[in-house]
Length: 98
Image: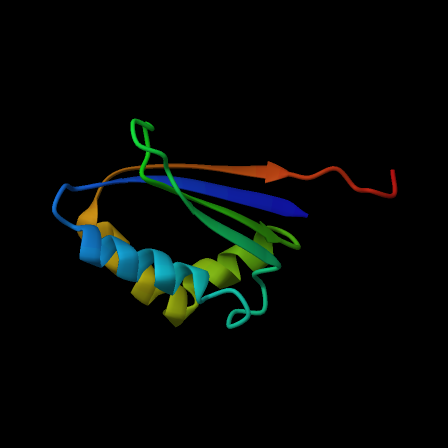
């Protein structure tokens, strides 16, 4: 399993677009089969980032399929129009059977 974590900082004055983006991002869960789990969280006041996505995929190929899905690309385009910063990390999760 692979955990994909992304954090964003948004431009001031884009709260409406931010809400649309975060709602749209959460809506991908259940719509894109490669997305095995999904948490979309808002940062607390004073946090370095405004929101975070914590998601899981079977493997790198599943993550790439998710990234290239037209529904993800549409949500991502909205994010790109309002973000000022983005950080991401992909982590391999230990096999529970080992």
